[in-house]
Image (cartoon, rainbow, N blue to C red):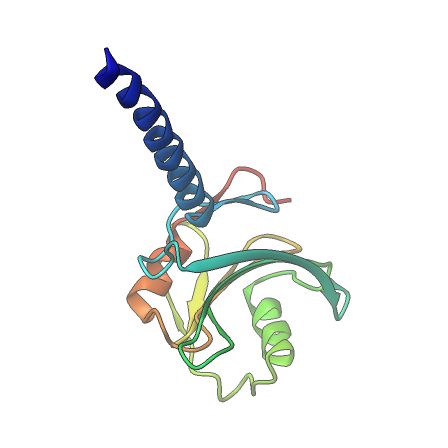
Length: 168
């Protein structure tokens, strides 16, 4: 009888810990962001990674951004991954999004080395540390690995894991 009395509280505490850890891990794995579903994130996103959402405007475009970052050994933080959903009348197509992002990221549009990538039926471009596309007129999505932590393969896999029903 005393073994049962000790076992039940132990199991209850253990179950609570497992459920809390599972909820935290699930929250770090993606979810909804401004009408889009983040279905896959790189393995580098783990319990040591914090996640924050931001909303802001720049150049008549509204942004909804999710950022994953982790503490550096010497202090401070580094961004591991950023996903941006942008909405604005100027984002008419992929060329317009490219021009907008070049200005936003202070890059020369002519010198920005980009290539097409397979993102289903949606035309998309990627560079070494970013991938972006326009799923609908007035909507742009960008996935960024600004510090090159993840690598291009993980970046593109993450981008391909973002889905939408009706992005407008």
